[in-house]
Length: 472
Ligand code: SAH
Image 1 (cartoon, rainbow, N blue to C red):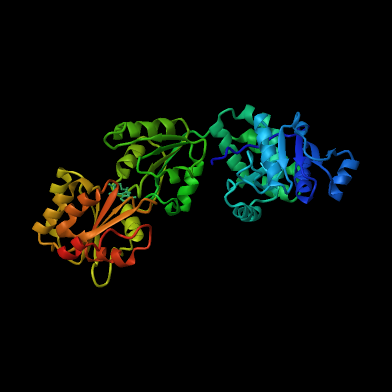
Image 2: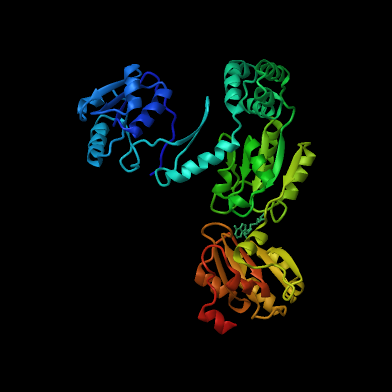
């Protein structure tokens, strides 16, 4: 069940609460705070509900549930201890298109009430979709400590200035920068000290002097291999500030989901079979957006300077006078090794590691195979999935033993990660048998065998099979 979150304006709207006990009382109280016209239906009422009835804040429908109680209601809360009655209410309400919340029964509810952090007018609501209300409550407690109480007053102040801000800064990207600047300026601390007039003056002053930046900029950002936890803090910040994100297909949805909601996302796929953006078009896109004053994030899988054409993009930006920054990411070799339990160097087995790419015949022919075939080193081969027979053949032809272990890591660090282990002599065969697909990274060297014992993430390696033992 996927819920659509919404904040409802209940002011003056009739809401029926069925049940007059303490739960009904709690629900009625929250509804009263939102200004709803609360009607409680029950044979008896708790003392607090009774006093609200006496103060005419709540209307009481005395007796057992009656279908007519639903007349003119916008919402219903069922808070009795009778599941049969709850089911009946749900059915009747559905027929009338009225949303129902059945207390402590997610299945029977057509709307859920979230755990709330109240910094009015700012409200943060958390729902676990009825799966784990306790978890939602724990998250609420954590967020309570993170959100400064002054946020409410700040939102109030900005609400009053909203019209003027929109008028002075009609461009949404620019407005966003104004708000960002405001958050790091003195306004919050003035509000915290209770100096509202000074806070307002400070916000107004910034508004008058705030100006359009002459040029935008580009952040060349490494997204890492897929697991969003591997993004750097600086990377997260850049994603939150971006107006435009130009991303490769390799970048995971989870990482993209961390970016600003309203940032424009443009996929610049370079893989065959998908719409094709040439490097020249990517350059043109970066330039067009940056020249329009936008903050562009050029988001690449792994690290932008490892087989990512990051160098070419920077040269282009430099030639065109666009300011840029580079934020490194965790490259596939490091991530795949870590998530497969393969230490790339090891005192006993490998004193060096080489990152190589072997995606086509040309790149294969330019590699120094004699050097790559040397012992006591680890190879991390990028983009090699389609050339595995060639890699196997060349390494063996140049003297690397067919018994050298390998680990092939597909979708490293992602939930669907697979690790295939074996020895060089059966590399191509094992990859075909396992139907390995891109993106996959090949690790060759004695250390690769450690995946069979040190693996810790996801499924165990497809490795110590009879075929493996025979070949070894
Ligand atoms: N700049 C990237 C590499 C781009 S080349 C980086 O630093 O990681 C693309 C190749 O990277 C793929 O063909 C594959 O070999 C490797 N790769 C990238 N992400 C991967 C992942 N999650 N799992 C396995 N290999 C990956």
